[in-house]
Image (cartoon, rainbow, N blue to C red):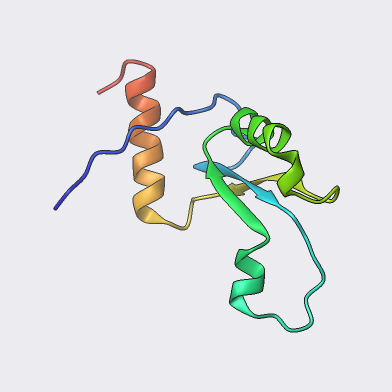
Length: 94
């Protein structure tokens, strides 16, 4: 069953195609277990500003090493198409 998702798209794509932002909070891992890696990631966010606001508002949940990181959704066909469709809609295309 198809669903419709509405995203607030940032104008600042930081030179990547179909960007999204994560909060990465690195910690020492004794072994590279997927659960340990997943615990270091919060997001996705659809603008740097919203990720930074979340980090500032909930700073007590993160270490001092937490950073906002921009990643590309280019390799996810569905995400890339949704992003591009959203951008066209936002500027009055299609």
